[in-house]
Amino acid sequence: MKDIKGYSSKTLKGRNLAWLVATLVLDVLVLLVIAFHTAIDDLTPTRLAVIRASLTALLPIPVLILSSLISSDHKAILVFWRLKHPLPGARAFSVHAPADHRIDLVKLKKNVGEFPVAERDQNSKWYGLYKQVDSDPSVVDSHKNYLLFRDIAAMSLLLVPALPLVLYLSGVDSTRMLVSATWFMGQYLVTAFAARTTGIRFVQNVLAVHASRKVIGSKSAVSKGAAPANERASS
Image (cartoon, rainbow, N blue to C red; front, side, top):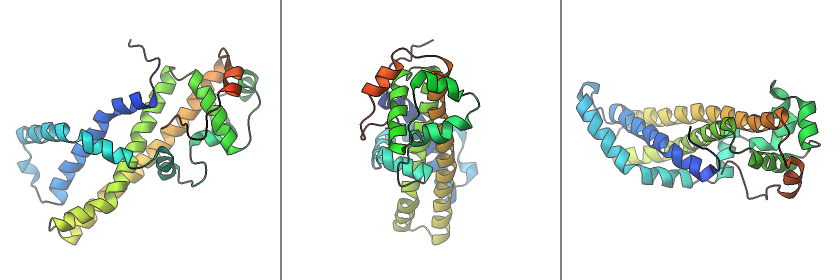
């Protein structure tokens, strides 16, 4: 098994790039059918393979640009629909830990110390705990999934207003513009809910690890290494 120790948020986002590109490839194929009236019968396996290969080569840079237009905090707002302290770590101890049947709150408190109350403090303490177990397979997997769905959601929402403008300039009628925008809005809603679920699971997985065992240096690392306001596990 490949060693997963040391995977950073940037590394995980790099691993997700192929899935982001694949999502846009699917979106382009849908637009060919919906907006440009390309007959499904015309999309033969050979033609699909050519389109897919061409788009896979061309789309990584636009995908990176789209995913970078919105900051991680604003992406969290789009996913959790909270303007203040939107990151799930801000409710790690007050909401998400009690909701997870795997987490023994008594053992968790014994292993990590008192639970903070303020949302900002909860996020800082949770981030310190995350940094101690960031190579745990369950943490890596849930973090990767959260970043993927979050970025797809943000990318989809950006395209909701941008796409109709492009289609209008291309001479596409209003009905097809509306259907195309509806497709991306639906994609945004689905992936936003998926990101919300995986983001909460990411937070819970970190706490579940700490509840199951005493991580060496846990209290000292948390007290000395709480994340500054501009550091986020979900960047």
